[in-house]
Length: 318
Ligand code: ZN
Image 1 (cartoon, protein in one colour):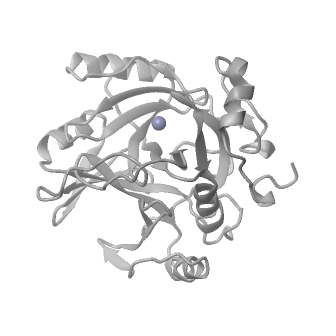
Image 2: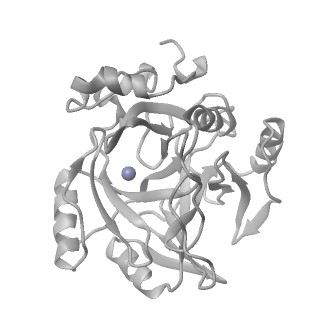
């Protein structure tokens, strides 16, 4: 057996104020808050998950927000851009929508057949909305952005590296293959090669080293179909000399973590059990959910977390 991920599972980044973070991803990007929980490794702070209606793998961006977080710096050894897939023909709608929300966006670029609109979230995290020529069949969340224009899920991430060879070799080892080059940007794809399977390795030897803090990506997770595949893949990585963590229970998936040679922290996360493991689909995101091992500390954790106001559209009919 050898590793062949089918695509991105989620991207996790660091943010400042949690309310500002939620307002941006729900109201401006039109995603759904699919889980409100604590950071299992730092339970006095939130872990917020945004995605499609059910928080399916490949639709997810998650944040560790803390109001007192220091700002990070984009640079090498990091995922320096997270791109979301939007329908062809929707980029003009998005420019107007973002402007109405008071959010600046960059001039639209055309990159190898794709239309790309760059912007930043309130903490400075670099994002792109990308219209890929291959139609994206994923069903969007019909929330605060009309379904015809809404984000379909993740499109890609860009990893900045000083040197590409070792990173490329590790990606190949995960079943993510080189497909195209545009200048200093090397595109790799997993699975079917459509939106949600892509990673761009950007060779930037003169860029400063990144600093992971607010406004930067913490790690990028790839999909494993189940726990058996994850265990087999872990053994394969260990056999290849990669320093991999033990399997961790993240309640909504199981995870292992390791660094690619360029410096970015990667994760392999299982598709199961998903976000309806501890609350019904209609109620996703509405209440603070904690894993069994943190339940005894619920009151203390709740008191440490600032209150979050969510738009009613996040839980229609609930
Ligand atoms: Zn993760």
